Length: 227
Image: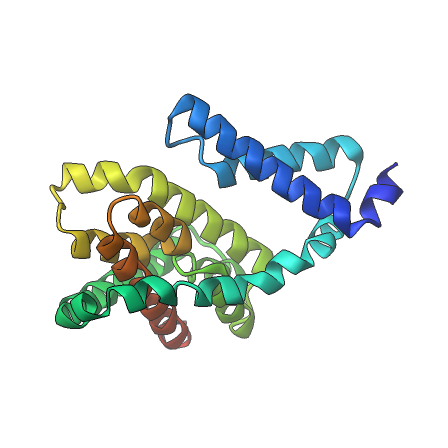
């Protein structure tokens, strides 16, 4: 049975879609942010793999199509940028300043915490790009000698936590401006955060899209310098 599942890309794709859809339905039922569809879907897929005896390597190979689609999916974020171009241009200095501050803070804290915890260089490099989108984070990690699997897990976890905690933090800090909210979500929680920003307003979504792109470029430039 496990040999049949391991050799079928279709089953890997169906498992991914099915687990995510169940996670989405579960969140709609519970109305609780912690039950993020990505988190629930990942847990369900992991349980199925353990029960069927399919290795993670075989599953990842079957889902290679999803990895290929990451880049064009990221490019699609240009649509809200185009729709809100005039407002983005007006607020561009503030957006760039916010993204720069957020990126430097993220990289600095990761580097400091890995040093305090005594983590080796591979783990440090793998965790540094945690706040940028997967398509860019994996490239940055691999180029610096990191482990892509660890980077992917860190990026997904960061996005989920940003999506869950972001609205509460915005409320606690009285961050009501759509531009500021977009910068916060895009810089700290990449695409997952941008999907949450889209629930706030079109402006927040567009700013978040721009922020995650700029944060990714800045991270790619600064990571080698810091390391």
